[in-house]
Image (cartoon, rainbow, N blue to C red):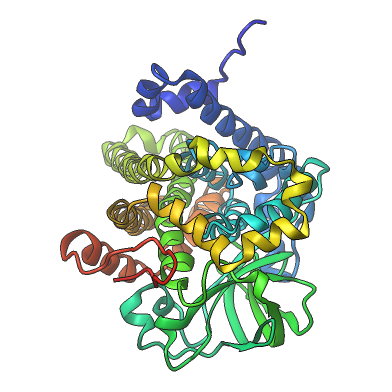
Length: 491
């Protein structure tokens, strides 16, 4: 069979990322897999997103409750909702799991930051199920996502950590220790009763499943921070409202209300009290780099529309013929390439960290057991037991070293704040140079400017990310300890 000819977008990807071209010489199959993901994202943009993005943005300003499920169903064709799900349970996450996510997110966000976020926020919801080693839910929740996606039915997840009185506080151990926590998960027979609110949850109003962090004792949040799996149909759970957003409108930011919601013990991801490392820091170490790629995609989209504007003639003159415009374009492209270097460095490092755990024969051997057996009650009971979780965590600790996880958090935090700031600089500079010109290209750049702002805020504000980088990389006062039995996971 003749090899498939690489598309123009695929060839440009390798030109833009020389390190991927170099890696392809040693791992053609793996890198071609990444190229295929980006080609699919480019096709989705061209056929689905670009024709509707501006209209959708304007509609959701008028109707913030509206959500475009048709675009999510179209995304199923490309299996974007399986990007973070391991191949052993039918997903697309390979040895380049983090890099693949980052590259796809950049491509999607170059057309619309909101649609890119809607897809990325789902993967963020999946992440704690993966990182906690909650393998009992791989064969239920993750299996359902994969199988329904193949049928064209998006089953979405979301990640809920922010509270009305504690946003950035819950993402850093020192701050969480002093945070004013409102939500509490009280231990009762067979599980927990949860009361309180979460806010600004990306994709929370559409998600069938949530990964939720909460304190089991509000007076000791750091010591009792715990990660739970929540199902939408649990009694007492509701989504009272979504926010009217300035940017990235295509993805809702929802308020979640928990009124005496019962969450069974089987839905605790990891151990009670290990949520800071297990449910926050390791997730942030994996996800803040891709937030940098969200910012990069938004910036790239703004740059491309600005470049198109500079080539249009006005009164017989083109802006691109002026040296000041040419220098500005060079600065903008330099910012994009700086962003790519930062987030790709994080992504490849993250793949090196997780690859040993998820591709080792010992790990893969667990999935030689037929799915029907793995999903059965006796098998699930063993995996969900104290010792079953302990065995999984021991294996994770063998493959994922504390120093490597901490280094990944530092690189992720650096990529996040630097890429977001560069995106705001680039889109703001483009608008300044375009002035009050009323053109379709300016509408796109203005949308990119609004979309970029949110990347400075979520996944921890840029101020927090600067502190996290300093503490982990320079001061060496923040260290992740991969959780295991009897370990809380943060130092």
